[in-house]
Length: 164
Image (cartoon, rainbow, N blue to C red; front, side, top):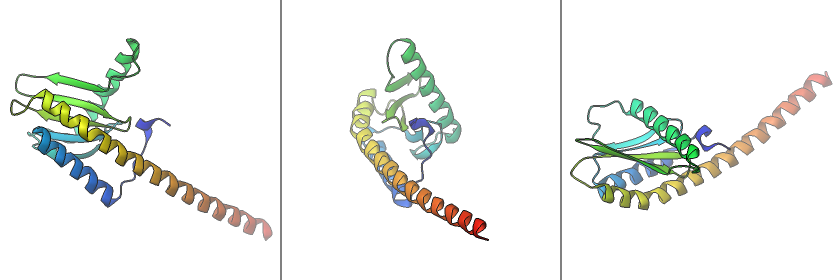
């Protein structure tokens, strides 16, 4: 299955864990802002200073940037690029893949360094990946139960229709 096509069904405790992980990452990295988005560009959660920009638009553009970089990687004989770094005069951003399911974006300025952001990213990405794996497993189990129940209902209804 294409992870980018995954539609997440988050429960309240999932969002709380995502927020807690993102908040801890933000504190540890000293980044200005951190965002977690899915590979389709949907903003999942964000923490920190928004600096007056539209986070939803940012998520969409960052996912497109990451997708374009994946295509560039393939052209260069790589399977993927796991991270992207963009440096500006006053701020920079570091984007990293989270197990093919999401993208962690860190926006930072001179208050921290790329090295610190990368170090904290390396620590938190496996935690995000584990949470996404748990959510995906739960969603598959729930989906299978719902599908089985739905199928039984449809079969029963067909039997009732033809019994008359």
